[in-house]
Structure formats: C-alpha cells, structure tokens
Length: 393
Ligand SMILES: [Zn+2]
Ligand SMILES: [Zn+2]
Ligand SMILES: [Zn+2]
Image 1 (cartoon, protein in one colour):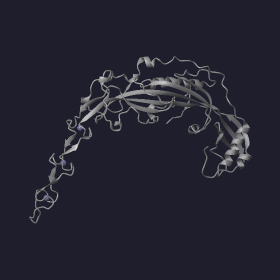
Image 2 (tube, protein in one colour):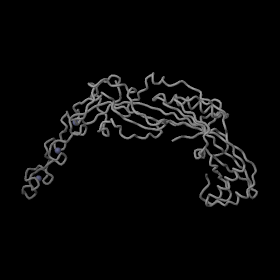
Image 3 (cartoon, protein in one colour):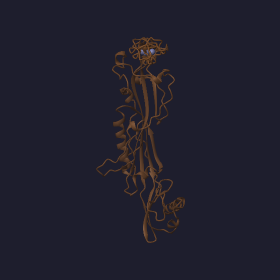
Image 4 (tube, rainbow, N blue to C red):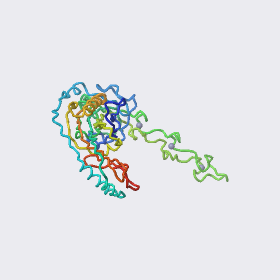
C-alpha cells in the first residue's frame, strides 16, 4: 500500500515514496440501479457485431476499456490555485519528564521486562529528533467505456430511436463521498441494440459434436455391433448398435452458451466510472537512527490540513523539507493522475511527530531509547533487562 520514505533534499536518491493508482484498493459498489439485470455475465461482443456510435468510435471491444479523458472544459473548470492562509505554526514540545515517564510505563507494560533499569537509569542526554509527516491525497475520477453484450430476453432496449447517446463525461453518475474509493458501471443511454447471435446463427442452439447432431452414438455395450460375444442381440441397444447421446441427451444439439439459448443478443456500451484516492506521503529525514518502518506505526499530531479542488504547495513551513515535499507531491500527482483522470479534490496535511532520543547509563553501560509519537511510545532495541519476546514499540 502506501510506501513510506524519508524526505531528503540532499542525497542523490529519490527517497520520496508514491503510490501508483493501480496499487490502491478500489471497493466495488453495489449494483447500480440502472445496470442491466444480466450485467454479471455481460461479456465482450465480437468486433464485427459493433455499430458505430457517434462519440464512441473505435472504443475497445472488451477488457478494461479505454480511458476517456475529460473534455477541456471540465479539466479547465478547476478553480485556479489559491494559496491558503498559512498562519503561524504551533509546534508542540516534549520534556525530559515526559520521556522518562514514557520509558517507565513501557518497561512495566512489557511482560518480561524488568522495570529496574528503567527506574535506576541515569539520564545522560536527551535529544529531540522531532519530525513531520507530509501527506497529499488527490481524489480522482476516471471514465472508461467498452462494448458489452447480454442474452436478449425481451427486456427494454434503449436504442438510438430514443435519442443521441450522451458523451462519456456528460452522463450524470452520483459521486461517492470525497476521498472514498468506489466504482460504478452504467449502460450508456441510447446505445443498445438487438442482434442475432453470430455464434449459433441466431438459432439459440448448436449442433452436438459428439453425435454429429444425430442424437445417437455407438452402443457402449456392444461397441456398435448390435450383438454380444454369444451372438445374442445386445440387450442395451436391442440390437441396433446405437444408444442415446449423453452429451445432448439425444436432442442432437446443445443450447448456445453465448446467447444462453435465446438466439439474440443485446449489445450496449458500458461506462465505468472509477473514483480513487491517491496518496503520497513522506517523513522529513532527521538521521535519528530510528528504523524507517517504525515511522509507519507512529501516530502524529495533525498540525495542518488544507482541502480544496486543487491545493497550493506549502511554502512557508519552518521545515523546508516539508515545503519541498509539498511542491514535489503536487507536481507528481498532476503529472501522473491527469493522464487518465480528473482531479476532483485534494487534501494536504502535516503531522507533527515527536521523537526524543534518550541516552542513559545503567550499571556503567550506556544505552539508547526513543520515545515516539503522540502516545509517547518507546522504541528500545537494546533494553538491558529483557528476556525473549519483545523489543519493538
Ligand atoms: Zn448394443
Ligand atoms: Zn449429441
Ligand atoms: Zn447463440
């Protein structure tokens, strides 16, 4: 899911993690009320059955249909960048008492730890490695279309006799709450038509291959001879040498799978609307020595939220790594997401993550631990009096 990485403005490597739209979970919505009833086995029709529909020329016959970019007027209808007022930042602090208290609580909460070192330790040094987590969420909508077909069972056919098919981005589809992944499939109005099934020549059935449509196969008992070894007539087939074909139950034909025996198919263009929350985040690097994966377990304290159709990069945050992360994330999301979708809303947040490194002595040995996050959780990989089972947070 979300990759977490250090923000770094010095190193040659790109530490900034991002998520590709494909890697995010998309929940499948309940069936849309207007979806055709047989939608669950709607499949792609053969290309030679497709009509030309104005505005839908050359769309994919099947598979995850082709993305349709929003028309210029929608893409440009986005309000221009508005720098939001970036007030004075209030940054919380962590004291020595808080760090010691957290450590004693930690030592007594872990079953096999002795609290002795925690109580007897001598503080050497307390260093703040407080940092920030920047997160950008871009909520996008993408639209794709593809041809579908279902067996025709006499249902209503919304054909072009009822009007001209609206263009993909003109179809009104109810949007889920902001930042919530969802997917909806609807038939494009006025694109349905009924065609004879090409698989069975509109007969609804196909000749049985096993009995070559005769309904009879060689008798299994006498291998088609009609008599047994004793020269008596075969009792299984009464001497005819033939028995009923098991494949088609003697009918000589089988119902066509494509049209489910109906002989006719209803073709239509299906619109798939996908909403996706794309997240990119990163932690400002403090070179604290705390393993990277620990950061993802730490809860920070939200100190800034900005939500708009398009957010403006943070420019005046006291830590310039956050400003850079904001600029980079916004630029990246635009380059990445606008290729296939429309950004509906963006939200950027900054979390303060208190981290204190404590150096202490116990029995003349020196040790280090960290208190992390809003809950003051402790990370003490080299705690001196542990036994077996636990070391992390
Ligand atoms: Zn027989
Ligand atoms: Zn048969
Ligand atoms: Zn058929």
